[in-house]
Image 1: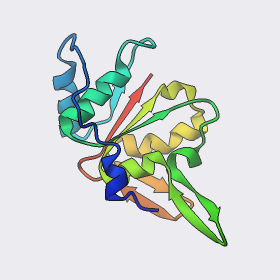
Image 2: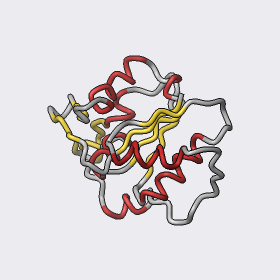
Image 3: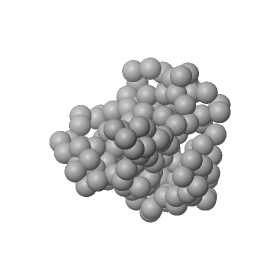
Image 4: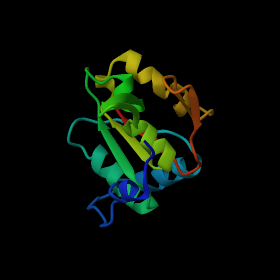
Amino acid sequence: MNFTQSSLEEHLIKDEPFYLPVGDEIEIGVATYERKLPLLLKGPTGCGKTRFMQYLAWKLARPLITVSCHDDLSTSDLVGRYLVKGDETIWVDGPLTRAVRAGGICYLDEIVEARKDTTVVIHPLADDRRELPIDKLGQLLTAPEQFMLGVSY
């Protein structure tokens, strides 16, 4: 299932979220995006990491897809899976795949909570290759220039 324009719209942040910078983090976030680098945010729960990502997505006018990581999160939850619908089997993209296809921002919140066998899928996406392997489809997606990966720890 492809990420349609209408579903892309629902992930755009239309109104400026309140965010009070404490330093030059906005400039650093924009520079990270422009250089096609992943962004790692570290801080205690409630310090504003998610709000910062919302603000950055609004500023960059990119859709933001947030995934709350947990120990039951699987690679299929991120990348996608086959589902039975009626009398047919269809592929449904996961949130990471949708963000890559749409050139959006995928924010993996509290990635440390996810299992190692799940997080390994982001390795080629987070380095200079910027690729997402979809083994079940036999595809290798190359992230468009507009894609950004953000993770919090």
